Image (cartoon, rainbow, N blue to C red; front, side):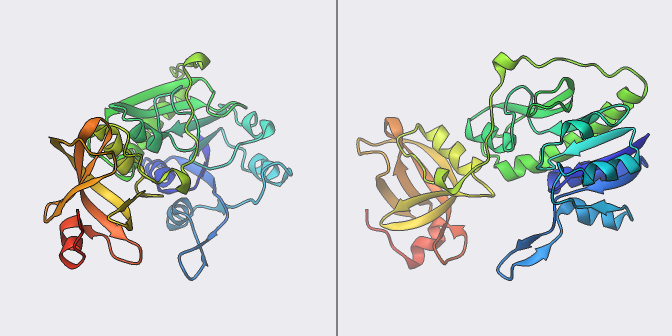
Length: 305
């Protein structure tokens, strides 16, 4: 089976590496163009490009998909199937219909929930207890294609989006291999999605960073964990703006308003949430400072309560 792979970030690179390890024939790899990174703004290759080049695969980085150039490249590669994992672009109809077995996608949710670009983060932010990965046949609509296989997992109460990414990436790679084997032997199912059950997962933005302390404690913590590694939860505590990385429930209550700091010491900063229960902020970063425990920060920056 001749495969063309399309993907960009670490999540996709895991699936590409698995194809390489399983000795599938990958005739070409498409990824997004190199982008400026870090303070020096030097162009940097994405994880998929690095993985492909390390394996001696040919890499294509088209600026556009709809001008016909990418289609001609794909036509010359003559894939039996196209595997798409977090490519970051919508394939035009002529590319979708070209391969013999179509285009299959690995998606970081249990479809039809969380269609879109940030399914993993949205699952954590929503406080979901279960998530997973799905493989599907790509269609013209965003993540609307027929489902092939799914695999589910529990979300840890203190698991960040970044940690969940790291767990779901190999799960997605494993599911991809099972999917390709099923397609090859003719046993792959096609399960139409129920659009009435669909939810959407738009990309995160910095505007979502501020913590809403009026929410109940579990959801405040889910916000803190869900916003990592980017853009991170933020809050102003004791007159200082922070990025907030970790916290825990205290089991204590206060009659003071949500967002009020009621204690600050070596264990952390205790803040009132909706319903009166408090949480303890245990890890943070002040503007221009380093990420550290709240207790360590308070040693040099006492906070009045």
